[in-house]
Image 1: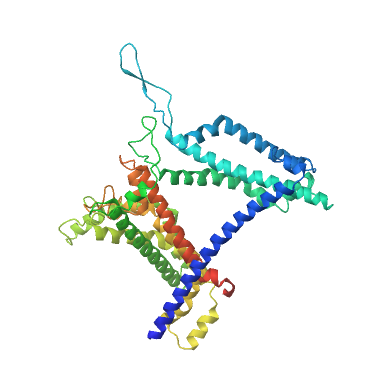
Image 2: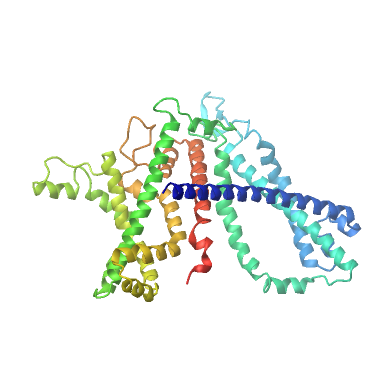
Length: 491
């Protein structure tokens, strides 16, 4: 027994070491690519002819010179657009980016009455400088990438010309856009939308974490500035029971516990329900499935608001019924007592989440080979052993990525907590506005746009840490799931 435990420990240690080695290899590969990038750029400049070197000043010249007018025109337009952007917009925000503004807007004083008017003097806008300054840096990086790409394109054209190799002309470029590179043509617009709608706001949120932006530094009345890692230090401050760090780690623990409980209960519940409905001899299977699908069809926020009214302490239907039946004398605080409230949110989440798992697992159960069950019955295996030896391993193999997605989704499950308990009940050992059922995501909402707190800098730090937790867990677990490691074994 001791040897088995020791062997398992060694195997886990080896897996951890291999995982660290993979991370190290990834970093080495990343820096090698950067090195190769600069080496290739230097070779292009050193060995290029006058046509290639003229591309250092006029983007696309190497394409024009070798019969690629479409590419040349696009590169030239990109250069012209970039120069105009930097002259009229980008340079201003980039020059202010280091300080986030120093010129504060002031109310204009009426010379007659001596009182401030509704008009204000022109001043800096820290929020706009942060947003457009960060966007300008991203635009510069993209331009540098395209600049180097056109240099390499010019050098490739030069090499092909010297060795009498064919050079892709405009007709071939257009044909490739609709054939070989058709995927890039279709994905160009969606990718641009993701960059504008997701990447830039994400970068903006990360940058806020390094400023003192809060309700006391709102523009245009006030400016905010860079504070480095002060916000991270403040969040991890553990001095005193009411320290922000103590609240963060308590909510982090509950968030992870909630994610585990809500994922496991809905998954197992949906699987058991699917097995019961799919069992031979059960009649009206479609009707049963239809009842549970109705739960999905009703908007989640409607269901949760109705249920929260059912379990209200004062006028809730459940307390009224229990009181009228003589079962209780005092109203039960279903959603206002810490342990009971946590139990209730997990229970109510099962009612909402089980139908999804039931539908997913139903389709998988129908595809498990019947011969496996027949062989198990011949060998004398009962229903319990059959479930743990055949059904559950098969289900986990197929639904491993789905389980991971559900777990990450439950870490950020805003609706259930916010609509049922609002994060409450409050407690003296948590920094306001945190509550005992708050997840990190609902706490983030409460300290930013909820109430009058407006602590955007701390909310940004919490958002970054939630992302890190989700990303690390996702990568570590996903790479070790059977669905990824042994995909070829699936039959």
